[in-house]
Amino acid sequence: MKFNGYLRSDGKVGTRNYLAVIPTSICSATVAFNIASQIPQAVALPNQHGCCQIGADHEQTINTLIGLGKNPNVAAVLVVGLGCEGVPIDKVAKNIATTGKKTETVIIQECGGTLKATEKGIKIAAKMAREISLIKAQEFPISELCLAVECGGSDFTSGLASNPAVGVASDLLIEAGGTSILSETTEFIGAEHILARRAKTPMIGEKIISLVQNCELRAKQLNVDIRGGQPTPGNIAGGISSIEEKSLGCIYKAGNSPIQGVLVYAETPKEKGLYIMDTPGQDIESITGMLAGGANIVIFTTGRGTPTGSPLAPVIKITANSETYSKMFDNIDLDTSSIISGGKSIDQVAKEIFQEIIDVASGKLTKAESLGHKEFGIYKIAPTF
Image 1: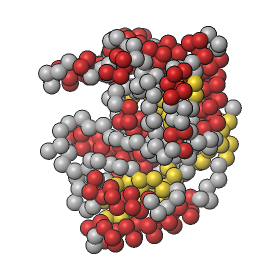
Image 2: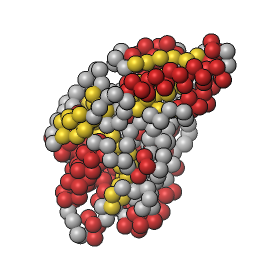
Image 3: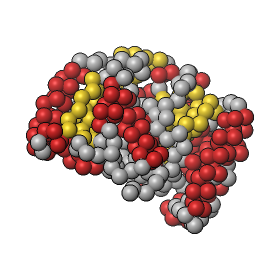
Image 4: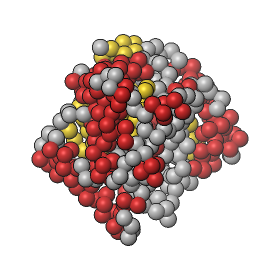
């Protein structure tokens, strides 16, 4: 099977053809948005960080911004900096440029203020937009797809129906040579041993166990019980009784494929197949990490309902709760409640999801895209100093 995508200089294939305007700190975010607002193909990333970060937290923000610029859905990049932030502007731009993408910078302090920087940025971005408009979609095998799988606002139907169906769809993609990423480390708690048994090697299995142990340790160091935030009040109202029950439902999204490796936040898979990425349970930060790791399309299951989208990739929203689908029809793409009612099997619905992945990868707008949902957030792992 094939989809229509956009070939990049580094050989990767995008499902969209964006010009990304990336602010290296919150201080340059307004200018980035003002530039992008004038260019139809441009999307600005609302980076809230970039200064007064230290250590691993500082490096994670840098790596995430670089990864987002390298994402195959991005055709060209304009990096917008203030000029005195902690994130090194040139480092971000130069690393993104290693993909062969047109990458330029605008530095507000060097331009002489925000008005001059905006003017300069619009001129650069307009030229970039004209150039990338010449990139035409071509047919590619679905092995070029990298799927990010996410769940949020889960209820009892998520683990029973929508997540298992997504898991089968993920397996179908992997069988065709594609890649899939499972995230949300907090939602492995109590089910980590099951995932570890599916690891390609014992070392990978040990990494999965360590992910969860380290996650719980971070919470203990704050003198809090992680179960105070997981499951969420909405999860509990939706019929999920414990973090272990939520985790058992969550991991269904990974199907039955062997796990090829464990990725740190924003890391790119080195081969094809199923990977686990260490992300928080917070949906938007989790999706951002997977996009920085190269995912070019997102599947998002929800029982309670959520409108979450993304600036850089289409997000396909799926529910198995018929009442939620009726109430939030404008936001949710697929109703899989027929599994609950007995009208269709998990495998039948999985094939429908798989076809939707191909259609959206080929250019079909998701409801989140059509409504302009571009939620974004980078995961912080330390306080700001």
